[in-house]
Length: 316
Ligand SMILES: NC(=O)c1ccc[n+]([C@@H]2O[C@H](COP(=O)([O-])OP(=O)(O)OC[C@H]3O[C@@H](n4cnc5c(N)ncnc54)[C@H](OP(=O)(O)O)[C@@H]3O)[C@@H](O)[C@H]2O)c1
Image (cartoon, rainbow, N blue to C red; front, top):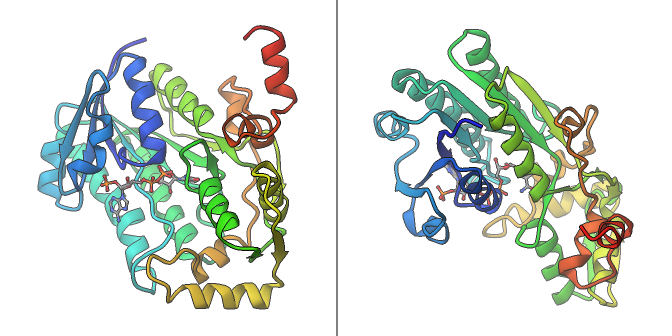
């Protein structure tokens, strides 16, 4: 496998932490670009990793930063914006992608992997609409022959340090009743280790070839099933209540006003679509993905599922 110099934006976050370690173990040299260096401090001791504080929205600064790399991986994404109207989403999901492509062309960086999301370009949420616009820019760069690209579109990603299960776990611990908007929305939670395996294999193949990979775990859950299962894993006695859509919509409107927006009208709109795969890209990559119920109990403390037990039985 040829070793690459890889530049990662958004590498200080949840997926980035796992990906950076994996790329380092694969022998690549990794630059983690961050807006604030202390945010990536935990990665400074990983072999072959350099932390670089940079201003990603400043084209000159970005071009200088990507120079000398073989590939850019863009992990930047936001679930909520500060204000309203979609400006924050457009900045993070579209303007930044545009700048990355221009910077890569100027600095002759030939490859780019764009982290997107399942359902990008569908529905009416600013999140999904801008995700789709970002993907379109990457596809254009590929079809114009500017770059060799790939796009990943995961469902919700889980892992011991995720914000998905951990956020629900915190809510379950502090509240006797958990009211859930869009309780019937379906997810195929995907293990972060499988996601980074997909990155590793695509990079090892050498050519990204303009492919788009949807990434889903092996189990499909409704949101209510998932939260009730988590409650049971944590050994808590809590009531999980599914809200009808008019009340769920109202919950989004109310939480729009809470600092940090733990939930929002935009999240509600994203939840109107099921986060499940039509064409699971793991199959094309020869990866058999975990299901959440099989794997998460190993760190949640509940009972482990069938596949994990089978692996243990085989001495894996
Ligand atoms: N986690 C999931 O369940 C999930 C599911 C589907 C898709 N994804 C996508 O996968 C990617 C990685 O997810 P993650 O969970 O690792 O996200 P994360 O933990 O929130 O990390 C994202 C990183 O992006 C940077 N960032 C945040 N807001 C930014 C902004 N407005 N402008 C520029 N940079 C910004 C931050 O890095 P610095 O502060 O260091 O600059 C942050 O560490 C994202 O694109 C996300 O949308 C995630």
